[in-house]
Image (tube, rainbow, N blue to C red; front, side, top):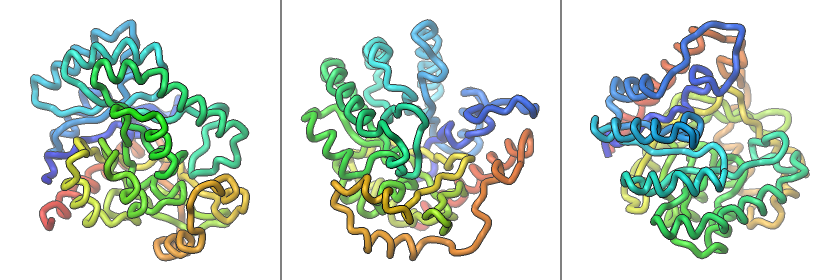
Length: 332
């Protein structure tokens, strides 16, 4: 594996791409074309971005033209879908398949306020959302089979490795897999090691993400940081994912500007996972070994940074991530 095998994920730019709304400060939002240029400057091989955020059914032809242009320029790409819209997917999958695209990342939609950090006990509709997600997967399975198209489900701080495997096995289809966000592993009582061990045969796409983990009053806070400067041992996992033949793509994705907190000091947190085979003592010991006991657990955004200063900060963190990964890959 070399740095050119990696792509740059738009989600790394949570602020400068407009995922965080800011109408008070002036700054130029990053476009897909600029994402491509940033990727090239970092000597990366391509980009990953949410296709449905930019291209609806009304302007789908523009999206296909954009993808064809990337292909002509030898720019790799992997597509994410922000929302599980069956009608949209049934329309775009045949079109994407015609131009040689055979996979996309999805996530489970949530009802009401979105919960992160595995705090499903705060959601009164988590089980309903999970059941609806499984039903949607079942409904789209005929389309996936017809066009040999695989949906890779991300561990979006909502589903554990065990649950993802259970969902895929229950639907008994070749055309479902997993999008492994390495940094997100600990948000649902996995470690990167346990997540990979449980799901390695199903992983199709990887988000290379890291977090600094801070001890907090409620549990732990997962704070955005450059890749290679947090809790994940990338020297180990880069080897594993490169040698895994089922994994076809990988992207650099920094964490959100809004810190994720896992309320693991609340017994209700654990009760919501009681049906899963989790060794609480072992997990707590692991968290204790990686967490920072004292420190300011805030992102630049949470410290009040805005506008062009925060845009530059995001650029700097992405640059540092690519530099760190390049160094690790040379050693490997």
